[in-house]
Image 1 (cartoon, rainbow, N blue to C red):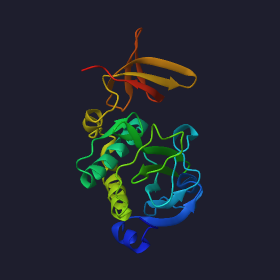
Image 2 (tube, one colour; image 1 turned 135 degrees about the vertical axis):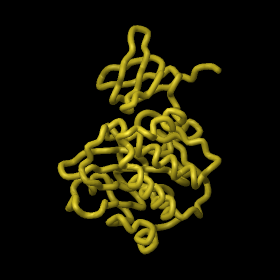
Image 3 (cartoon, one colour; image 1 turned 45 degrees about the vertical axis):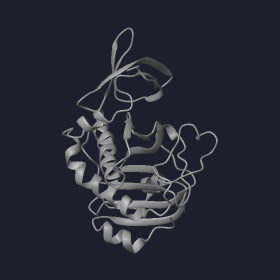
Image 4 (tube, rainbow, N blue to C red; image 1 turned 90 degrees about the horizontal axis):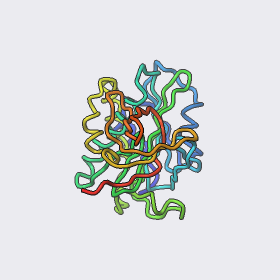
Length: 249
């Protein structure tokens, strides 16, 4: 793979304004600060490489050149339930990936991570900034080498370096734009739960400086996590899952 073909992307994404870079610090940072009119088309900032890509809680997202998809989609402010919006984007990405890689078993780790073979291959970051909603997406498509700190937890989708990322990137963005009107209705939640990495398993969830341990028993109609601890049932709208302990079949 190589740098993106701008002309091809313009043909594949006619409903969007495009801004394509070889290398940036972070597409999300550019999207948060750039000049943009909400009455215009959705804007997509795309990078072949990020030097400071990050997800929730400022966690670094390794973004080497030529092997991944890294973009931020700028939309008008949405009257949207945050839990439904993030899980909805995850399902939109899942649908696109499944068409391109029909034999891969992609799964979700609540709330914003995409997994394959128990390794993280993608993340989503949704932020509301003044006059816009910014949806950042990072996906490891054919990344082979990861920093030592990530080798045990990060993975990629394929070892095929000949894949044209333009088609996959455009399919994902077009699917998100098509699905957005349905997110608030929660139509995606049955698939999100079906492909959950955590439901019916023991997990640890970090919320601020507190850690909860219990069984992930459900995802609510608002995209919240239902956690049953030894003492009580919690309904969580935020948190970081730090450990998953699989229940024996």
